[in-house]
Length: 286
Image (cartoon, rainbow, N blue to C red; front, side, top):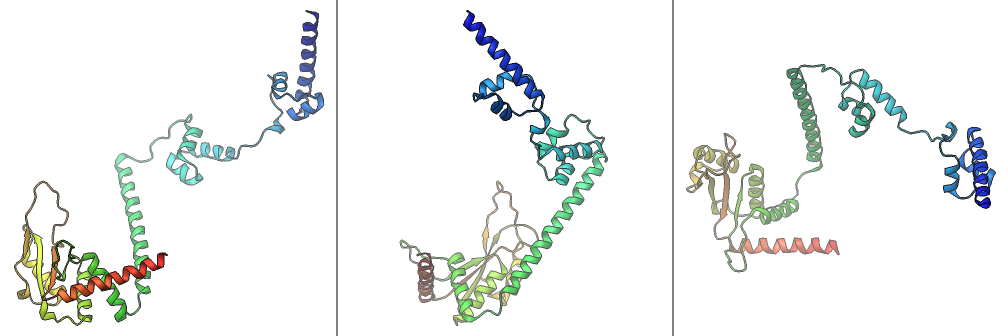
């Protein structure tokens, strides 16, 4: 019993010395070295209840941001504006200012909607300008097209968009279908490069039955530089009332199909050209 009381007295004396050092502005490490106490749990218990001196506290890197956020909130700023101004996350802003009163709306709902529309219009205009600049710069990167460049582009274009024979269904006929006027004209230029006689070409419009077929014929005749009378009977797609079509209106002209008569030999050459391109591309991967 006497030994236990002695140990208790020793701990109390040690606590008094530790608390005295703590109040004098010592850090835990300084108290440890002074009292030769190397048990962290014991050291923490000895100074429990006495706050650490201010000089030992590490500054919080966001303290200044927090104070600035609170100032801005008191000035009536919204979370979005504070977030953009300080470069902080929305969750941080909310944590810092949620105890402050909500600012009075600066605009009516109608004014707010108008501001949002104006902002959206500005953003879309900026995005459009960025796209225009990127496209203009890329356009300038294409110099005069050589015959070989057009040849390679045409082979890839046909293999992406043209009809292809299957091992179980060898048709071996060059048929190309597309709705993009630029693609059609590039394909026709490629056929001219290959010296395919224009008299061998057949033209047919593929279009929904509800569209203006005559207008489509005039459109594609101008694109292909042929007469409307050169077109075969159009292929009309039946309208499915269960689907919502987006390709409608005056800009919708369907697709143009271009077939080459007696084109088995041409088709087989296209297959060979494409296989050669693939072989060269695969060699680059090795």
